[in-house]
Image (tube, rainbow, N blue to C red):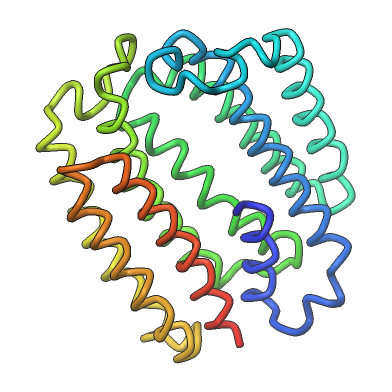
Length: 256
């Protein structure tokens, strides 16, 4: 999703002129893929004991992959991402370094803080769209994409914490501190904010009416994810993921 989002954000920023920047955009997309992959690997390393309860089939839990190998993988992914981003610009390299610092900080410290940790992950998702704009030296439209990505992922992060509430023994997540019901209410409120924000790019003529046709579907899926999360948070966060994919498709349609 991050890889594809980089192309979509670049296309939204400059339209058909993306062909003039295709090498830089491709490098940016690969860098996003590497950083995101490395972040997920760190997550599995740090959470290996918790995952014995929440996700018993993950490779570090089953022993299919050793922790040493996983560490070598994420270090390599992070290093390569920094090196290739230099070929885009210094700003791109600094964004990659910032993203990697935030990911490591999240896994080893901020994750246990609950909502602030959720915000960091959502910030990182939003940065993908800023990064796509940086790769084509265009930033204006990226602000709204950043806001939409941030709010949609923030809602999903809270739902995921509801899903893992029984296994998160070492984390003070929002549902663990304030209760599952309040967490669902907060997630639903963020979805409501997301739906409102999603119409601003069309209202301000940043994206075309084709964006509107598709984003209505994405908004409906987000609302459904919120509606079912209280009964089945696992299904709720999966529907939310599908909504994010449709949301990306709406950005692409709006750039046409």
